[in-house]
Image (cartoon, rainbow, N blue to C red):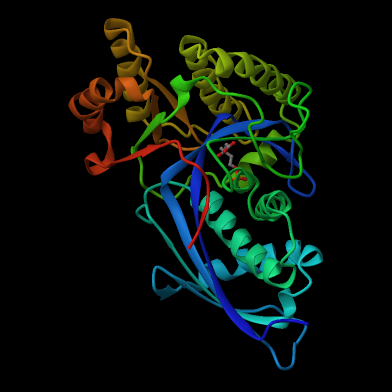
Length: 348
Ligand code: PMV
């Protein structure tokens, strides 16, 4: 028996990959395994008010407010998402949904909101499912939420839990699966507690290349098989690094992963350069600073020009000073976001 009406809400964070997911197969199956830090400040908050339809039409019925205003350009994305998850949520066509969603970060910041957005939406829908199946175990709830989020946007499956999430079959992390993200199942050295991510907004424009185009380009890419193998071996390396707290090796894996993602884009057909001159200025400044100060600050990149600056809690003051004095000048309007590793989505 379906409930007549109700309201659910979740706040889900963004995440930053250490080993990158780039390339996918049919059904949002990743071509290689990935691992990410869950963030905390960059998040999407979504609430869904649901009401039973007296006469279901066989279509999806929803309204959407983004930051308080209607946003018709989001409708096709949600329609596609609903279609993909329909087989797993039998109630979808029986309700009218009022979806209200907003991001903690500025809209045109060049920060992708698909991971946090799809995770928040998936969790809200799972909460509706749980109202009908109150005996559901928490583990099942979380993995199914991540499973649904994956069908919205691959990397979104890593935005349900925290602080570290693995996704994709891997020979040395047997719990990890292509179908949903899992909380990293091994102990992590305390040096990674409260790890910081300061996001430098180098280019706040519309993404030059959508991730759909990016993933597509990996299919048939001349270096793709090598790349997939490398992701596997980088995850194996990280397993020891995370356990032992070897920040020097951590830096090597993380920076190399970022540059490889960009190298794949540069050597594809079509080819793209997603960095901006200021992206490179920042990378060079980070390398110089590391050399002269002995700091363990490093960078990573997503498929865009913004730079994520990663550093341990015990270097916070020193690195913050460096960022403000030397890096912020390369940001668009001097804008940046201070974030850090977080514990995952929360119910609102
Ligand atoms: O979730 P998608 O399809 O938008 O892919 C995003 C992939 C990267 O952010 C570039 C890397 C990653 O693993 O998050």
